[in-house]
Image (cartoon, rainbow over all chains, first blue to last red; front, side, top):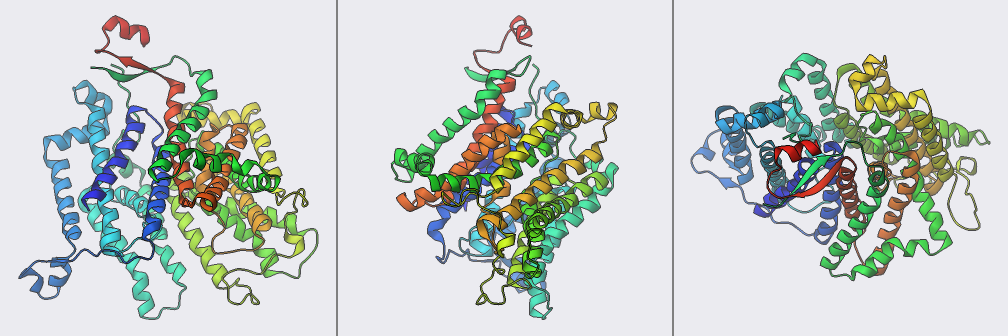
Length: 244
Length: 366
């Protein structure tokens, strides 16, 4: 798990080096990273195909897990579940209640002003990119340790991209990300329930639902141009080269 | 403290625009050699199987053309998108949509057999790919939706739809329950160029033609100018009276149409039927091709062959050295990294800086 965080962070560092230090196109670089990640993981993972993986044991919190109804759901999950909740709380607090969080948001909204104020724009962005990569690495560990405890090629099935859409959907607010993520989760497991109750829709159509839902949500959110403009960090995706 | 510093060039360097893809290729090979030696293979052997072995025999050159054709077709279309700042990442989905739309005739109407079938199939394939690309384009033009995400999501939807249609309604009734459609009849097969020498078919001709036409359009016509202006400065484009929403549609329709043509050419050519999986990621690899070719259709033709070589090399290395065929994917990802990194050389000069530059010196470089 720790290794996953490190690898995620290392890949992000690579991305940061290209986009921040070499000022490459961010979209294309992200794609390059995706392709490289798929290739490298496929190559290494080939050795693990079909092998039963390690399953992370759920962390059962005594007393609380015995609560009626919610106990089992909320207090007998894999450790990563708790981490995900703590991350939301932590990041939300950091972004909106600390000075460093304000600094980070200022770098996102107007890098020229931030630079003029003496903030090290590139350094802040490096830190943000590496943090994002570490979290993504953690999420990958969740997939192979908890969700389906083994290695399957392409097991991410575009989740990283859906997460991107989630951020847009949540207008860059961690709490709304949490809500959105559970909404998407509900759509994804909807297919399992639909099969149980015997809905006769081909499974492929149900599997396509999360992707279609992502598109629908994006359309709903972006339709209101003014709202999107207010919420989107103004310098998102824009490279910064200090003019000194 | 010594550190690398970027200094913007007054003009982009003509020299480096020409050689940066080559530098990237060399760097990729070096990085690849390191990767192979980490995997415990002789790096020179591996590079030999990757880049030389597939070029040694005629049949294998034909295979190269088969692999290069879809890459070039898709990448040429993508260059229009990327030049006009439209990030179509869903070419893989448009490829599949084209393949399905083009297959309607031979699969659903197998008794309709004459020389009209193939041209109709190709036209329907283009229409299918274009229609599928029109979805993200429309959403972007109308609702300002991020086209990267929507076009990519449609890839997954397209893959699932293909999977359903070949396992369900279109499954070959006489096919022993294999998940594949009936074999295309003779009128629905894209002819081979030189049947005695190898399998290469008309796909590669379409690809080169498409590249030539788009090269002409991009370089020599007003439309091409419009594409580039809107890509580099949408504001300037609007002042010039160019419509950016119409450009979004046009760019996506062109690239979707070409991806669809690639899809139906692949199915009617190399494969000969629909299967659950018809592409080893051509739609994504074409993105690398487009950038390696520096978004210039003629450069893309060359780049298409390079990436096609990496597919074939991957197979050769798998057979000869037992390397995973996924290594080719890793290779391709690295290549795009280096290409993007080296493109920096076109716009910036790299210098080793000692301490921070003094004012006068900075002004000299500004």
